[in-house]
Amino acid sequence: MLPPKTFDRALIARRLQRRKPEAEDFVTRLVLDDLAERLLVVTRRFERAAILSPDASQLPLRGNTREGSFEFERISTVLDTGIDPERLTLPRTGYDLIVSLFDVQVVNDVVGFLSRIRHHLAPDGLFIAAAIGGDSLFELRHAFLSAESQSGGAFARVAPFIPLADAGGLLQRAGLALPITDIESHTVRYASPFALMKEIRALGASNPLADRPGRLMTPRLLAAAAQTYAEEFSDPDGHIRATLEIIWMSGWAPDESQQKPLKPGSAQVSLKDVLGRS
Image 1 (tube, rainbow, N blue to C red):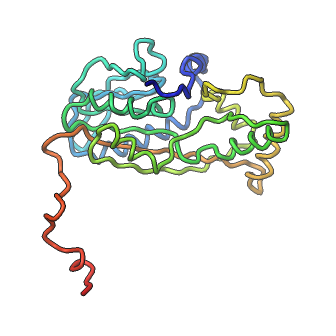
Image 2 (image 1 turned 120 degrees about the horizontal axis):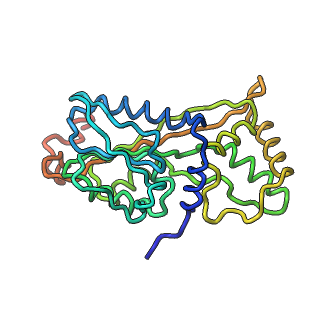
Image 3 (image 1 turned 120 degrees about the vertical axis):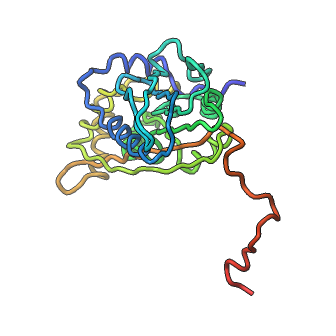
């Protein structure tokens, strides 16, 4: 049974193709800088590494760990018509590292996507993913819902994001071992709500929902949303705040060499002794 269609990837592809090369994509730059720092603490040499994203044009060709540099195979999961993230088939299997940036937030079957990633990993291969998640853009979502509720109906105009609490469970359900998740929170300031909306539009990141409102956004609705945003989420200098949360997930393809949890009853020290209770 196929999962419900949440995202319109054909629409996402058209928007990415229209994106201007000079558009300032600070979110991708932020994530790539963070990825580079995370890789530098890995004590492993990678021979076969792939990095995935809806648009691979800004992805790096090389990475570095504590054991040295390595080459990335760049793959676009949306703009490459030969790749379908819902039925993911990469050019090869046996990767010892796969990095996915912003993919899990545009696939309808997240667990299926992660499971297919696992099948492309060599035993004990590492998977790292970053996604916009949590409460990102909650201010914008609130502003639009508030404005539309005053006109007789509310529609989702900002896509939902994965909560941090669900991320680890998604990795486990996909069969990845030793899952780790964390979140990087940022507050970004803009001169006005319109400046934020313009940047979202320039990056091709406008509403990607398949079940998006059929009616166009009117100037009146846009103005009402901007007013609500400015009234509730602005600083004394007039700039407005936007929340950005990046969820990081990592897990390993299962392998016999990995650390295993102890069997029940095999502990050598009792919890009572550790806590010092009689």
